[in-house]
Length: 193
Figure 1 (cartoon, helix red, strand yellow):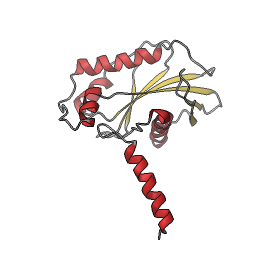
Figure 2: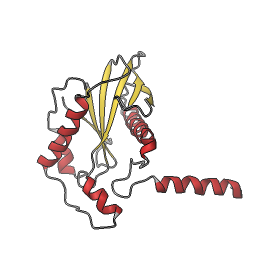
Figure 3: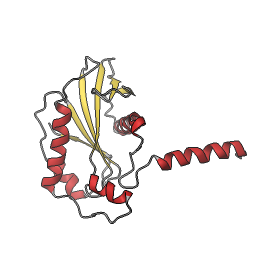
């Protein structure tokens, strides 16, 4: 049984979590800009655990690079000890987030295939062409695009992006699309390059 001190600490922790969790598409969110690296490492750890369950692990010991303004967001180690650079980005509808904050109605119909493809390609291109990369050298450089956007999490849209080729890329070796919920056997898709 928890004593009063433990109960107080637990209430404070839950209050912090609630304060820092976004209402719209908030599965992965941690809204404090000062602690963005918490969200990024959490996303990397979720992908790592999912890869592990599937017997597909190719990195371990992920960690944040801190509040550096230069990519990559995180680093990990390959099974043979080489460094792996990991960029993390979110796919979410910013208009829906703004509407949710103001407690206004948000759009619920799925994105069109062309809009989803444009949004994914924009994020991939941005992360594949950074002005500067710090750290390294990296034996692999991957991108995780994470998503809890209800307008994207539709079976037809997810199946559509499975069929698209997103390469060639210059810097990125692998790209993963990580979703909060899905009807498939795993919460990620490795996008084809």
